[in-house]
Length: 84
Picture 1 (cartoon, rainbow, N blue to C red):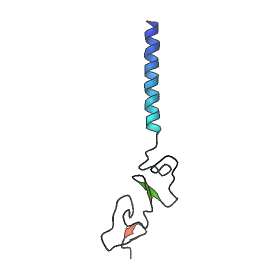
Picture 2 (picture 1 turned 135 degrees about the vertical axis):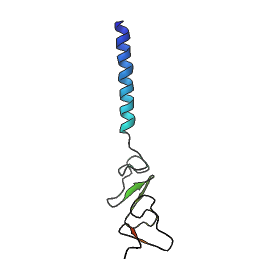
Picture 3 (picture 1 turned 45 degrees about the vertical axis):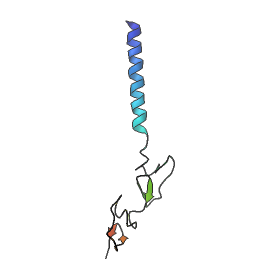
Picture 4 (picture 1 turned 180 degrees about the vertical axis):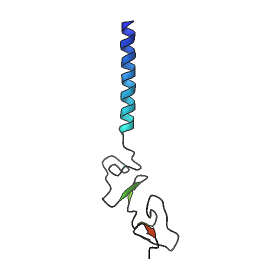
């Protein structure tokens, strides 16, 4: 009976550790410090959109946020399409 308790405890401990490690891994699609691959950091003004560093203030494909595309002929300024 004592061996069963110890082995059950070990299985539970390993399961909890595996879950903790999985949850602590960065999401390479959105993590600004690990964008697209581990250690690839976006610059201060950039955000990570599906693994690519983009500047949402001036990128017309990511204007104001990931994949917020400006209409054809419009530009992105300060995170808004066709500002001013």
